[in-house]
Length: 334
Ligand code: GLU
Image (cartoon, rainbow, N blue to C red; front, top):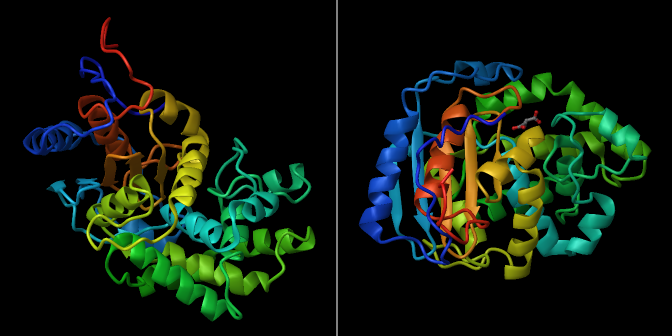
């Protein structure tokens, strides 16, 4: 089960607006204090460099669509974005080629299988089904236009930087470490090619995917990137229209179904918002029309979701009234 610990935390009704600025500030500080002492979880080590992450590092940031920012702890600490890039590259691919084409090649359904599953491809005649796990994400990266893999990489880098509102940089050590150990993703690329789901060089596309996963972001960046999806594609800091409003709606629907690995159903049940996590310890969670929460803490649960991140996000979803299913606060507040 998810690590949420919302016992006794009041559930505020989802109103369509964030609470007042100073209230949000206070709840963010409380969410941080409440989750900080939690020591559960394990830092990912299947990409060797990730094992060096400081398990104590913990940051929370809320970005509102009007550009207000609320941070606690290590909200500026940089880490590789990993799987969270899949959400934003999905949006870029849909914006470029339309969600019908992405849907035909990739799909929008949860496979219920781990993020690096090969079986999921075989079970579905090569259709990756889910753009938020590696097979679907690699097929999605291949749909970002570019005459060469280098052009596609430039488009991915520019697009993700547009979401963050600043030029993102590659963590060369993480990239080298993953590139040296990603034979499984290379195999997934080849398998997709064999099923006709990838019409570009699989190894070159897996390399672009590995680079997108190695981009450095902070909890602050994740909050701004998420708030861009929350506001019809307009970055709350730069005002840039990064993708269309329709693409944001479609991307958030995909995140609601698939964003938290095999715990996506539990996440929607407990937190009631679209989100995406990554194995380096980040989680972005989006409250449509209001803003987004970015968290960073490396220790993960068995599905790959940050434990402190889950706790802080569950707390904020309740106290800020973000859960999209909470329409009435009469009753037990359970
Ligand atoms: N780059 C990682 C991989 O492909 C991303 C995994 C994740 O964050 O889920 O294995």
